[in-house]
Length: 170
Image (cartoon, rainbow, N blue to C red; front, side, top):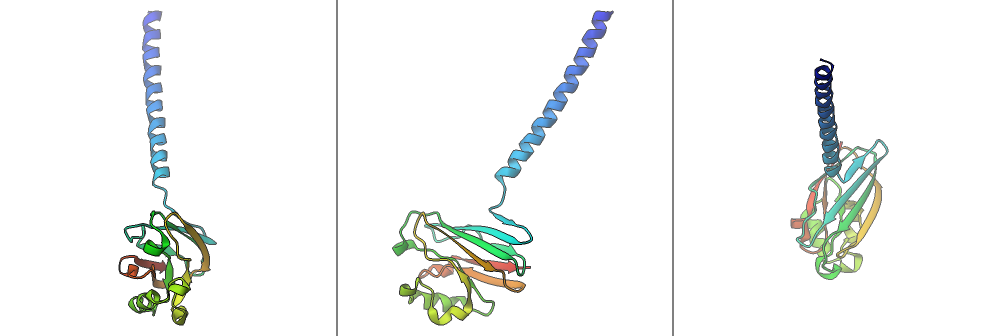
């Protein structure tokens, strides 16, 4: 009888132990998934850390960036391609709300000596990175403007048609 009671108790203990082990594994898997899907954009009350990538296919990896009005923005542009600055340069330029993206893009194409930032249109530009070639990175800091939707773009000749997005200030 004691042997039967011991076997029953051991079976229950093993069964309970196994279910606890499974719960721990499920929690661990969920935690790993969250880490893998962590965004490259982090914000707190004081600083919005944003990372955006440009590639050799003339694309940014983000089409929308959200920040809070008045927040300090620390933006890092990474050129993840391999092509040089002369043939596939990228920058990140934030325009004012009233700026005409096509006009800025066309003027920028003629401003090679100024890193493709048209000096006569700086009143339409809030912030910008330097022009980068493949494998390069640049980080800038600026204060987020008033609430609204703004346009960001790359001003390398011809890129603004594909390399653009919305910078939403809430």
